[in-house]
Image (cartoon, rainbow over all chains, first blue to last red; front, side, top):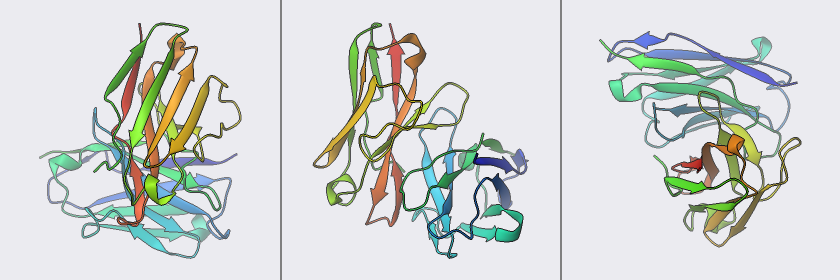
Length: 120
Length: 111
């Protein structure tokens, strides 16, 4: 059974850097074709894909955020880390990590999400 | 930024058939990329509902079906039930963005 769980601060101040961790089990990022993505959802709004990291350390970023975000993995600890700089109140959202199955372009399953509020 | 367009809301009475559209472009759905659908119940994480345009993962009732044609896709619920009240999102890949894209989301209300 694959599970993912997001963790990190619930409140950050404007201009600060956000670091979120996705801890997963049931699969390995050493397995060819596997990936983990980050998706966010502002309150009452739609889902937005942020970044993705693949088993071979290939990384992809949303063009609108690529100057502010980075994604890394620690295969030995089964975790993926998302870093977002210069946080703004508009970045207030629930942040999800999700598994991308081998060779597929969908996300399943998702973590429960973590709400991050940006406020002074 | 959503580059897949969905109607904001759709409603229907129990037992009715409802359809949600998902309109993309020549760099996403029109480029041949598959469309996937997620159901998000209130206060929960999205759950995969349809993968690869029309495939139901194990456990998804057969009243949910999907299709893709040209630059669009659709999700149909045949025999709407009260428990289907949720937000629904389509998702694909966009070659111009070199990344995944989600729809604007549709709220289904059961009257």
